[in-house]
Length: 532
Ligand SMILES: [Zn+2]
Image 1 (cartoon, helix red, strand yellow):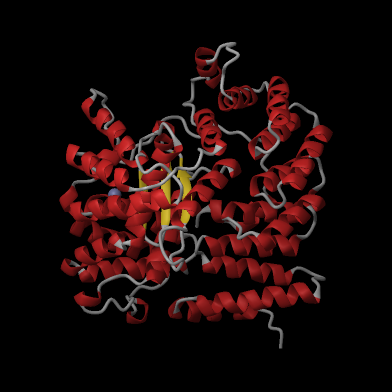
Image 2 (spheres, protein in one colour):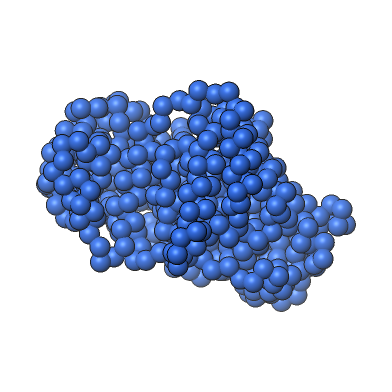
């Protein structure tokens, strides 16, 4: 079992003190396996995952095999797609590949939502996240999970280019290209696909081994989806994506413009050909077609958001490779120039803060915030810098005021809660996180932070409850049940809490696959407290 997922450990972990972290030491390109290995891959994935779930049962149980049906029905259901996508994301999170920075996450989610809300009737769920990877890539996973590499964001020149790539990925999802490509592959290897699915789905109920399954699935499916979109899929994603782009108020020329950037990469002598180019060959025909299509769109793009430029600088600082100093970058490009853009000044402030010079960053962020108090990121950066500079009271004042200006903003609430916890007021941190938790659909990181605040505030039962929610979001039902049982075992919980925990426990148990449900009941019935 992976200790990273051990709830007790997570709950007693001290709150994270360092708000700005170095993300990674070097770019970690994912290398693609030979294209034709797909059938072997599916088979070996089945075996790997089978091994992961072997602790659960020695023999395959037909009850657990998803009903794949005849090849004609070989398309995955949206629920199966979602489960698989969630497992893959969890594998990425376990490997610390997902950037968990509230300001960046908020930006990518709002950009993604702006695009996806123009994409369909709303029946498809979407989930957008940034991957800590300097290679230029974006990808769609089954179930509407869309990842954007930090390297891609940094390589775009304006927000419409970034939106163009994301719109293309959104189109892959709405046109169900992934499910189709899996179906295509599985026609020749239905058995191994079924094994893979069963292993993943059983793995969902299988506790820590599921993390292994998620990782294996991440690799195989990432490769699988990268190589199996057809040219027709790509053309369709361009066509549908450019419509999404225009309807969302972006410049549709952003899409061909970024294709041109990529084709310049291909023509250069760079060693690292962008990942994106391998899966999305850019031909002059493709550029010409998208340009032509964009020209036909009769739209007046909206002004670019300030958040785009700020997020770019934020990522630039967060993604600085070990051994390099982001302060040098800003010294070289802006020096003492008075005409530096606000985003560059913001980046320089972050670079100072990250280098342990928070006191120098404070006046920079203060000036930015006073010049334009409508920008959330200036408030949170100022609050963080003040906290790091030892000005705790100032930090709380800054963040409290930000909370009044931007009620229930996720980044503001998270930064405010972090400051409160660090300054010993976990009770207030728990209150504001709980309020956010109940109103805004929480992310797994948020659920975990709320659990930490509750625990620090002495609300142990609630902290178990939030950890159970965290595990539910990551698809680990057994760990979720375990946390709910711990919550129920805490002495002197209120009737309201008991009712809430028991209702949730009932729901989770209902959602368990059949075999795991039987085992769980056999194994744990002695510990369970029933309301009756
Ligand atoms: Zn594509």
